[in-house]
Image 1 (cartoon, rainbow, N blue to C red):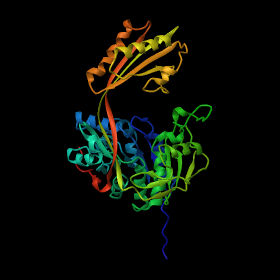
Image 2 (cartoon, one colour; image 1 turned 30 degrees about the horizontal axis):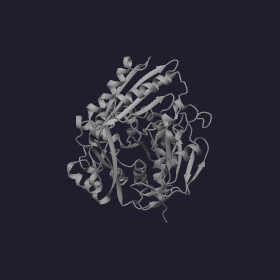
Image 3 (tube, rainbow, N blue to C red; image 1 turned 60 degrees about the vertical axis):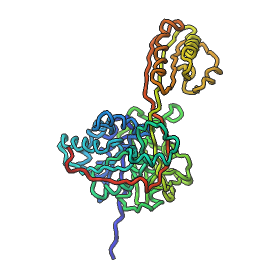
Image 4 (spheres, rainbow, N blue to C red; image 1 turned 45 degrees about the vertical axis):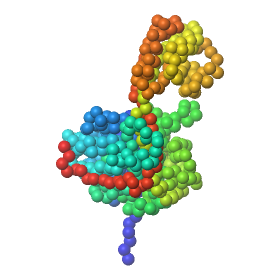
Length: 462
């Protein structure tokens, strides 16, 4: 009788939770992965993932690509990856990320150049495609889903949230690095797990568990105490050196969450629970392109020393549709600010707001008194009107408006500037901006209408 040795747990570290995250995060994660591989079981594998896309990041990337055909991928790619790329390749740590954004092929070319410059062995790079639905030939699909909402729309980007299967297939084909565009965040973890353990695409229980492991990883330092910290209520040690997470995933999809060695922050039952329910609309039905995950009976168990286990996650059959985000031009956002200080500062700031409302007739103004009422205010101004003048001596007035016509929106900046001499006494520090606005719509498309694929492109990269 022959016995089959159990497949060792998979190690996955996350080094970014969004575009603009810290660029020095990957170093401690990679150091920890290397150390654990050295002391681990034969056949153990490790992955490094970077999650760098938010809902509108792709639209901004698409605009960059319009201006430069070689742009449109994660702008911090070099800063994030260069410090660890050679070590990852030397130690067999594979890399999976969505930092391809609107231009995965250009990102792959940049990574190949980076590897050459570092003197590393040429990596096998796979590009996952199929999510981008912005080409004219595909807009009929969007019209069918969005109907009249497409009329007159100036489309910027349209991307489906695709899943883990093409990532797993690319890894099975020998990719060292997989560059994606818009894949669902947890799929960056599910793909490596599918490849490592050989799971089927309909193994719902295991996929559900791995999806929630990916969900815990996807926001980077958030699960390690970053966004969790609240002094005196939820204290986090050495927050300035907060670590990034590492998951150990077993053959059944169960996971233990920890963090990079020697870093600050913490991984606790509370931090894991907060991240577990983050952005989950229905605990019994967390919809992803890979599976419908169910955490309604999940258990979080602290294991000590910044290690927390997640158990009892279930999975159900995946949805028959992909979610698609459609971003389009939405006119202009105009903003202006001016400060008032000293006696009756708040009264003068309120008077300045009244002047602007009268002068900018036709524009609907959002008014914030930073220092008195801003975050808890509202676009209609009702909250501000109902909040009495409290006599603050240090207030910054912010006004904002949107308009389809640039010339109309530009009026706001000019009127705020004029407050220097035309407004209440003592105003200063004027700043104004005019920003093109992106609006977002979402729809569902049948899976069969969105063919996904990967391609190995290590040969001939320039």
